[in-house]
Length: 303
Image (cartoon, rainbow, N blue to C red; front, side):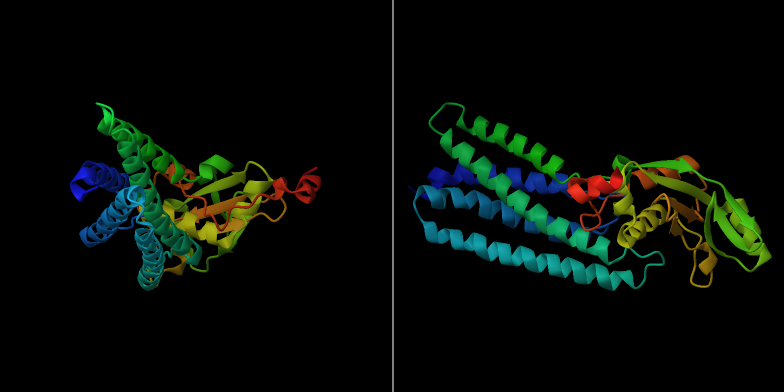
């Protein structure tokens, strides 16, 4: 068959895949990508991935199996994109006052690589559905319906857990005992200057993060996960921390007996409800998520 015989198949698959990439490319509390050049790069890669996925269907129908080698080359390129994202974020990390942390950077890099695979799969399945329905009067509608379903599935698949799914976040009280700052019953650090103590009590906020089970307790035990919480809160509420004001650094400390974690922050916007919501919406890192209750030993320890 000629190329024009597959033109509708390729167009529907490519457009659906590209639209999926647009849906998945959104700026929120991650704040990345945050510049037009970042959009252009990722949307261009999404278009290329969509085109490769859509063109694979005509190659399959014409038994041009060697064309599938392009998919293998694309997979290598997507892996390189992941490395590029990691290097870019690591270089930006040096200028962050409240850093993301290596675990968060790795998670973002994996996400962008995985989204390209999702886009390619969406384009391929949509193009295949369009091709299978070409003999019916509404063949192209079948492709659109399948493409819409794939877009929804991709969106759900890329929606990971947030801290609010595994923990309860409650307001907490800041107080000083001598020079030691406390959040409820958890000691944070010592503050030597009296004017800094007064400022902290006046403008500071604190919450207590209570794990719902042993899985959550193991997750928030991870230092990478705690870095993500501090960074997310600082992005949303702002932070009064500066290079020469280490006392205003957002800090999380754990109660070793219960596993609950206290968060202290000096926000630009002093809003307790916003703080609680930003902590609840913090993503749970794949590298930090633990399931000790899924093991026999873990269940025995919990009992």
